[in-house]
Amino acid sequence: MSSLPKPRCIQYLILTSLVLSPNLIWFLLGNFFALNRPVLIYEYLIVILFVLPFLPNIIPCLLFILIFILDILTIFSSVYLFQLPELLRSIKYVLIYHFSVYQLLLFVLALLYLSFVCFCFIRIRNSSNFKIKSHLTWILTLTFITFVLDSLNGSSFINKDKKYVHLSNINFATSLVHKFYLNHNNLLVKVYQPQISDIDNISKTYKYFENDSIGNQMIIIVESFGLIDNQSKQSKFQESINVQFEKNGWQCEWGKTAFEGGTPNAELRELLNCKGDYRYFLNDNISNFKLSSIFSIKKRQGYFNIGVHSCVGNMFERNIWWRNIEIENAFFEEDLIIKNNFKLKLNFDTPFASVNDEDAFDYIQSVDMHHGKYFAYLLTENTHLSFNGSYKDMYPFKNYAIKDEQLSDECKNQVIRLKNLLGYFANNLDSTKWKKILIVGDHMPPYLSKAERSFYNDKFVPYCLVSH
Image 1: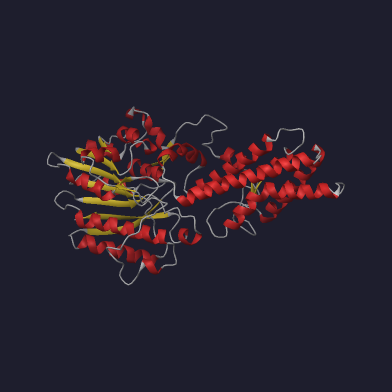
Image 2: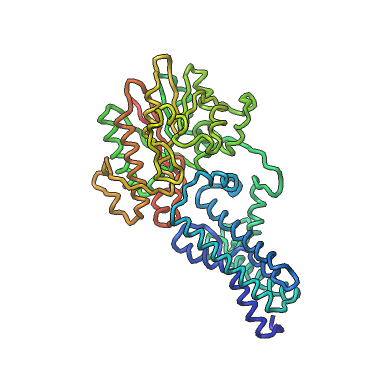
């Protein structure tokens, strides 16, 4: 590169700074947020090659925007506990997602940033006489330097053994295409077919309900119900809930269970004792399934099955696959609104408007259970992130105040909302109807902030077995 005229060297430095600017942005944000992203993405370097005078302006611009979007989606999939293909398939739900003013502002800033970078690409391209040889030399030099730095760290993307990283557990650099290719679910290499497989250990639902056919039973999967990583604080959380159940004659047994992925993954874990893609169960031929759902088991034991979700039925196509796993009576937001003569108020604390979880719980309890045994399933929604509600703690911790934590108001209010919901269950659970109830978290709350994310265990969620 020493043979390049000085002005051209300066232009290359400016061009490189622009192309690599997303890496600097994410690196700086990574000091405050749990982005889990390498310092550099190799694909950005390729953009430099396409900033040539004889190529249309739109090519480097579109390539940069495409890589930038894929970069953001990869970060979001990691933060929000999805695999990238899962996140891409979930984009269709954006139509029912309620964006906050803050999120819309970030979107506008991102558009302005992309417009600025593309404008600069065009100016540099039109005012320079770059040659392909110079471009290739520059790109190969940057790639080589990046790869050497990554190798010195012991974390290059071709190094399969990451036991001996020296500086950081996160790669210094990575390739989005390579990462996507290695994902066995990826959409670029083969036509993706939904698959399921056994989980390592039996789920808590199967542990407590599979071989128990005494009385009416219920499982409640609670949205973003995480295990507080500090054992003392988690114990105080549990104590504040135990008091409410015990005063109403119930006994509580707390524990933890491993989680992986988002809410649909938790449903597979608890309801089907498996992991994989829920779309496997969109097939309406139950005889083709490799396993029995907890509802199939309960049906054979003589139970009537009922499932209720506070959100709309087309979210993750639950209005289809729930019935296919033998939830004979499935009810969703739209059903509950009709059954309550359109008198239910919607909850807007989360991006997905839904009925209040308390109303969904009340509907389950309103079912006439004099005709036989019932097995019920409630999937909550009101504690989904991002969380905008503000609540008074109805069941305070003993000798501990969540309000004193150095956490955001969002985080503290989400904990309080969870406690209030569990307290509502405790104080309204009908002991004449139910024998055993399992309350379990789906996954940790996927906060962006490092402080809030580290407040929760990233491998386990709590469960509470309630019985009398």
